[in-house]
Image (cartoon, rainbow, N blue to C red; front, side):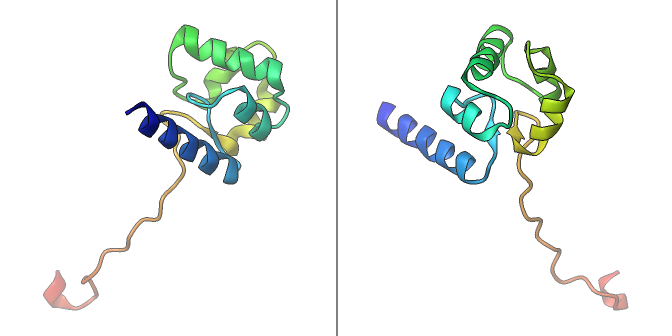
Length: 105
C-alpha cells in the first residue's frame, strides 16, 4: 500500500512540474522552489510550515500570510498555484443531440 501511495505521489509531482503548476498542499521544498517564481528553498520551507500549522491552503491568497510572500510574488505565481479550491480546468464536453429544430424543445 505504501508503495502505491508513493508511486501516486511521484506521478502527481511529475505532472505538476511538467505543467508548470504545483499543488502547494502536497509539494515538497524542491517542487515549490522549482516551479514558483521568486520562491527559493527558504520561502518554500515557510510555505510548508504554514500549511502544517494551519492546515491545507484553500486559496492562493492565503500565501500572503507567509512571511516573505507579497502581492507581487503571488501575482507572478497565481497561474502556477494549485490549491484545494483552485484546480486546473478540464475540457467541458458539449451537449450532444440538441439543435434548433422544434422537436428538441
